[in-house]
Image (cartoon, rainbow, N blue to C red; front, side, top):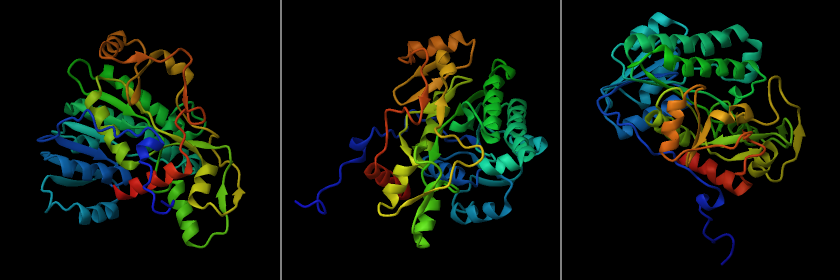
Length: 357
């Protein structure tokens, strides 16, 4: 049998694949608010909720009127009567307070996330990513929300840029909020993952556009650079399963593969040369999701890690009693030392999987 007609090796044999489907929190009859709900993640998790559950309300909270209008063409309140589109900004605490009335679950995805833009617009980045996190916490506690899950980024670990520093500050706000709410208050948690395959503004759509426009070379910052990769579908599943697992104050980190940007470029255009353009302001050569200093409070589960709050012996005991185990002292989880590395074939399959989702 020729290579052309040979069956493709299943992706799960090319690299360990994890769906992050379990556990799942039942969302039927719940009122859910998604901040930044018109972004790539917001649209994907909206589709998942609409397909799987019948919530009482699903509130799409964002500041972009045009994106809300466009999203409503795909997710019409006529087809999904529980959908609500709510114009607002996480910088505005009073508007958040109004939006969270009678809300059970908040998924906080709103952020200014592009590294170079944050570097040149620092005050705006802080207002959205840090003060916005504070506003979400205050409104959630005041309104008696039951669960809050905030999206973070690998750039929040040992940050060297403003975006990463602002998200680290936000992570600390959400983990500390567990104590602010007191007994019976919201269960706060954070999810931290890497680059999303095909998301707006990421390198894969950028390379695709260059190739479509007839590029004769692909620009890469540094051939040694590595990044973590996850599909949007996996990201949504990871958030929903972490929401169900959370006991309060955790930062959840998925086990996902890494790849160098040079290998990514070769996988997408094997015959094109590369042009080295240098690392942009605020970029790292390699990303890290669990720094060594966090190893003392990090537990490993089957498909993820959980960084637990400091001085939380009871929470640690609960995880250890249910099968988790402490990572070794000095452990770190970085894209260049990650044992799961994508090759070109696996990446192409991963991209295809993301497009089919």
